[in-house]
Image 1 (cartoon, rainbow, N blue to C red):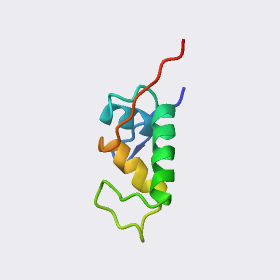
Image 2 (tube, rainbow, N blue to C red):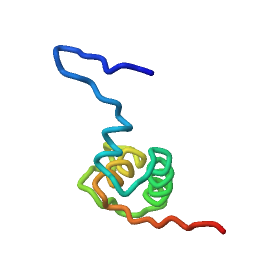
Image 3 (cartoon, rainbow, N blue to C red):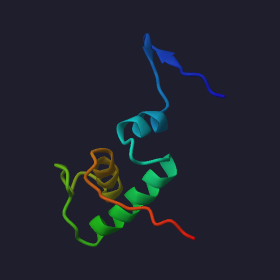
Length: 81
């Protein structure tokens, strides 16, 4: 198990844990990645960003992740029988 590393007396946290805390309705980091990947495809096909970011300066994947983290992407989980 990895320990948090301290640099300049600032504790470092696990990024996945931090993102999970920011978006509590997403139950795992893997689901977040899948949602962001699908949204990134939409952006690549011409969808407009839902957050204030310059499409020329940021890649669709970065924009999609920010949209997911800010709760701008709706999704539903379909349970299989």
